[in-house]
Length: 413
Image 1 (cartoon, rainbow, N blue to C red):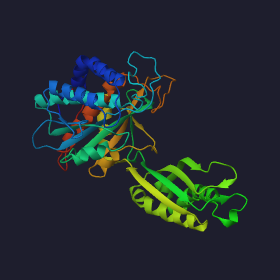
Image 2: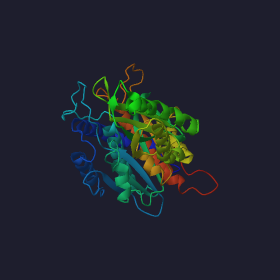
Image 3: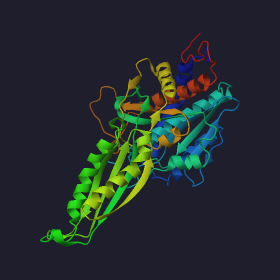
Image 4: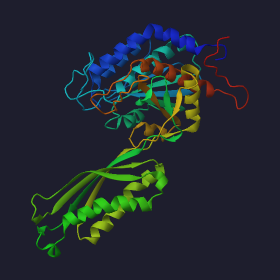
């Protein structure tokens, strides 16, 4: 890539395409679709890729698109965007607010999709000009919020042959033009646990003649999280937090049934794999001490997203090359879940956070809220960043074991 001016090429591409991409994002925002129901979204993506001369393939369930750009014997780099919306009412007063009652893009997946689409169109031009040293696998993934879409992609061979994969997510805490980067865990594993406790029931005047189920349930609620903090390396950040508890219907009767539901989150892969058996053992111990039966349903969600340091370095070089030296920003670990982690259990890669806040704005609408929106100039910044990342990864994949780097993102001589 020596002698090329990637910044200039991206400037020229976005001068003719940025408004189209903003309009595309607004169209998606007005027509949000929930997990595995993204039929219109899928068709809109596929139609635009076909118009660019690409050959998209829709996933077997009818939602989600995989498309390859480029050819040849070079490495294959995957770029992923999620396309589904949330069951959250849109509370914004904007011309492009959701037209679907109770559903909106409150997590920025419309932006992710549009950024990947714009990147796809730019890379298609690069490939046509013979400037793509390998292949780019475009993954427009359904059902991240369910989750399950990543597993659908993998079952369909979507990452077969991919050497490295990248994704990004809107971050309303970062200004447009900045990207949040971190090596190691950046999001958490997230599972669900449901516990049902049963006993003979009885009168609250005679708890000694029965099993005091509410008291036992309260002990489970408090002792399981406390015990976990002493049985697992604290650096794993394994946490069990309850979100729903239900038992009994009147004040003077000990019920025969109770339920507790919560989430298990973890930053460490080994601790995540060990969590179900550990929690079950602790549950049986506490329940047995109070004479109740306890049944646990443990529902796997997603593994932690653990960024590969080499891939993060590629993201850093790409951001500096097309957004400026100050673009990369350190970002914190999140205990939120993200099914991009499934890809990183199979191949190296990294996940970045894309700044969406208007610089200087005091307003902060967090994700998963009906008021969430973005400064749409983040779309152009995202295309620059993701395109540069793909090209950096392709060229680095061909770099000799020693010698001068092949990448110069903003060369102008």
